[in-house]
Length: 473
Image: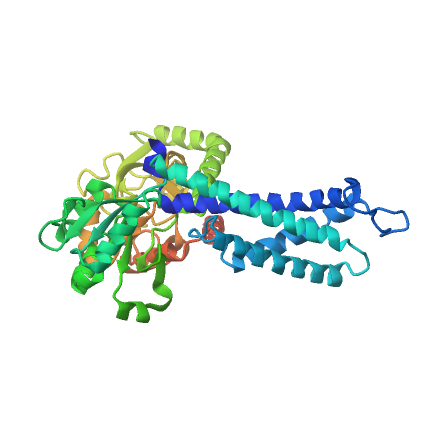
């Protein structure tokens, strides 16, 4: 049940691609060893010519070829798009693998000539290794393809899908494809119409497009497909705006004219052209790695910094009345509220008269210790507990106070886009000087840049810039 709720089709695709890469690496490496054994030690082939005066070449020489062949194979498979989520174990995929095997063999022989030209390697070993790799790579893909179908049949890794628009030829074609492939990884929950429900009783009506946000949240939808011929552009813009704060992927089934003009924005779903307007960020293998980094780093930080945190907590209690840990409701991913933890840097009654407001650098409500804690960001150390729990990430947009969300979302364009990802202890806006009482419009722009251009490398860069900023005070 937990897997069904936490893993959608895209995440499963990325996991299976990662497994495919891992299998390919192991298969190619093993193929070299097996080919060496067949050629020189099995007795199944004629006696080997003496590559060295000592006779049969040592196996260690061929171990040195494993990194080279693995890199060539992986680059060739990626270039031929054999790590694409839609690729499967069909006859066409086998012929594509044959093409990759020929290219990899030629590239390997060429590399041997230019890199190891002073040593003679058996071409028979190279040929046998290529053949073994071809067969094993195809069988590995076949196993993973069947595994994916079995997983989908159990309801795991399935994206919950809704179609927006009245039933036309394109919408009926899309519905037919989903019904014909029950293990495709997409579950058609229902259809959302402009004004009235759908006559086809086989497809449940979820409601009207003007209530799209409530529909997405009620039915836990992962992906929306908009049938553009029946949905006006104004409605599409309204849908995009309404869903700006929730992590739902939005695609368009375009008309032919849109398909011609779409260019690189066009993807394909089972042969049907789809215009992808927005993709849910931080999913798949990279998203899992990001979460593992969050857990590992926060756990390590809490262990290492526990003496410092205990000391700070004791000093706070001794120097001012009130609790050492300040708890406040903030809003995170998909608008979900959570309690953020910080060392108290202000008087215990700081919010009784003014409510939820941003603190100023010279805020009179700060304690003498609080000024020191805030300057060196020590007041935020308890947020490692938030990261460990999963409420926050190490890197992401800073979480906002719940009492300010409605006001900001009405006055700041695209403000709710920040809620498409988890909030962070630090972020792209903060390391670029937009921290505290600064321009909210600029912060939103920096946060949107981070979301649209996110990568693990960018996270590492932000963490390093944060540590440098803390060092400078």
